[in-house]
Length: 286
Picture 1 (cartoon, rainbow, N blue to C red):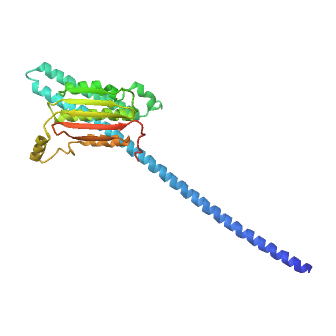
Picture 2 (spheres, rainbow, N blue to C red):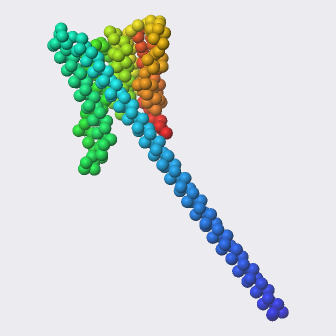
């Protein structure tokens, strides 16, 4: 009986040892599997972070490209118009030619100032300071509150502009403020280039939950413009009269949940109208 009992306990001990061994092997395998899953998850998270960072870089590059387009195209257009006017009156009215060339110089300086503002915020400081800390040293950022200098430059270049403000003007989020300013700038620049001799109206409406910007300019009727396009066989690369600048601005307005409409007016001229909500965060550019 005693030997039989010993044999039973020995068998039980052997089974227990075998079970422990199996469990140990299973535990080791489980730990290896868990480690592999953790490593794979970490690798996937790292890839996602790299992808998000790449998308953010692409979005920032697109924003900078849009800003550079707006700055350069506007000021170069003013310079071309004024240089042409100076050339026409140089021989007969030198004083007027000198005034026009002074306007060319002013437009060039304004372009350089805006470019320094844009690039200065991006360039690292020699002493390692945050570029944002140096912002007060740079030129003010474009804003609806600073429309007067823009209107004066456009009017001096030959496009009379009437401005109407509706509602109570107030500070806007920086991105929305710059976008609204660029809409006015692009619309007036296009009117100056493509509708010489016309006049423009700018209306800015401040509401509780949105800001609306509208720019109208007089010009040839829709039928006259269509006939001219038919003879030339082109629309100068514009869709419904909207150049690349307005197409880019439409995308920038959409980031804030707004919409932009640009089209010819039936009675003549062109209309650019945008509505941007103020209570909606910017969309994820990725």
